[in-house]
Image 1 (cartoon, rainbow, N blue to C red):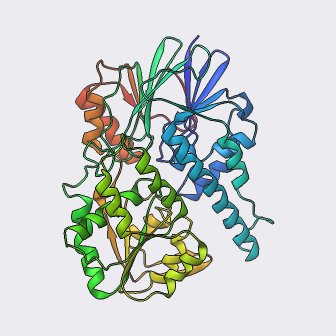
Image 2 (cartoon, helix red, strand yellow):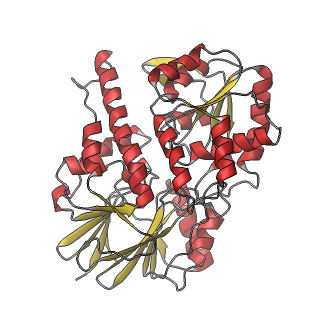
Image 3 (cartoon, one colour):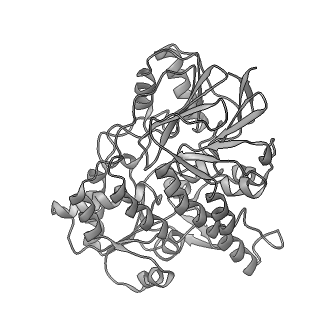
Length: 454
């Protein structure tokens, strides 16, 4: 019996990771992510999968980011009831991210209904907070480097991928085949996370390619933040920093704390973390010291220089403050959440600053801001962008082109095939070419929906 993979997401795009593996009468989904960015992609979230959720026997998650886990509440609501395997870090982060995702979708639907801004009557959320809470009961945490059976006769093993807390590469062994899913790979020189572990031997590899066509700059986040934030403090402006609640928020907070300790930034510059998700995620770093580089002193410095914003009233109070300040808020691509209110208030102020801290998927507000657009639509209103826009190329938590190739090159043996996934077409195709020409391996880019024998 052959082993087949169907590429239900992250093929030709950087979002929606879902890889359906079938062998005999059993099927397993590796990652269960939401599509983000362009409306054309987001609409895929509303389309039924080509396989009934109830027929899928198990799910394995590489990590908790929503483009890898955010479809799980919908899968469970529509009939999936099997186990979902992950690392304990991913389980804990999903408990933060998934209910918040459902809550935000309910809020967005309610807003559209109140203001009659949707062609649907009523506008409905993709799933609710309750759907997300229900799906969490399916999660089963597994240890690092300890093979487990997601299905009878199937074996899976997690190894450290860097990137964020709990992020893993997955070696799946089924039907006499070894299939390696890289997940999202971190950088060996990441400011926060430890380097990804070398990959194990495998017959087939699925490699991410978010930064498959570019190299990271030599500078680091501290270098890139120092001058802009010093400039902001001098002119009395407000910096709005859209951040991913997991990973990017903590990297920026750590960098600011270090810059204050070194005297580069004034100690009096207020820093606010206005994201309940990010607040909860930051607290997890204290209990997962084996996965990141921060020691007790660094964690304490972050805590001293950051005001955690919990309630909506506390968030609204930031608007009544005067003087320079830095506001970190989710979401990282400005697609929703509290950051939209801060952008709506400050984007039109020439003294203000918008700091983009990572990859901005095409079609998101963050991508349009990065492209230099002078207005954006928020909550049904056109908002002018007069604030200074700063992009931190050094803050990415993804391996770049050379680092991806180096990771592949550390495999003990040459794989038979490499599938390049989780990247925009240009990035994926460049990495495919490099794998074929530099490593002389068989590499290809699968199409969305394709089913291939492996």
